Length: 167
Image (cartoon, rainbow, N blue to C red; front, side, top):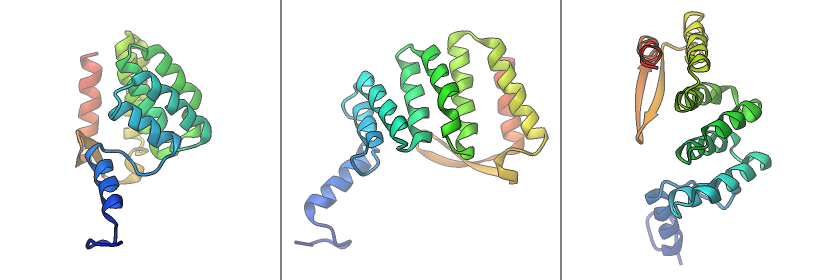
């Protein structure tokens, strides 16, 4: 019985609200189950296993690899996360590479791999100077703590230089 404005049943509306409240994507794929384990069950080990399954199944590989690396970092498995990104980043889209680099920078810092971190920061600066960032646009939309905002090339350059100074 459809009984609300968007044509959903009460059960469908509750499921939709549940996903919104817990910031879960809809569905029942390996990636969705991994996010459920991570965010709802707070079971990092189960989440990591499910993120691996998502990557191997080709299910939202960009997000699964990045999210898995973040969970591994939280579990003091940063070295393993670095290897995972290096091994599987070729399965990720071109658009995901910059985000993966940012995760790698954090992982290198956590592991005390300053030379690798600095090299990656230099590479990012070279890409900025060669006009290879933001898909040729002067700004990009970034996210932080659930909020979207615009980042200019100057701001990104400043962020990278500050990271390299305080590494």
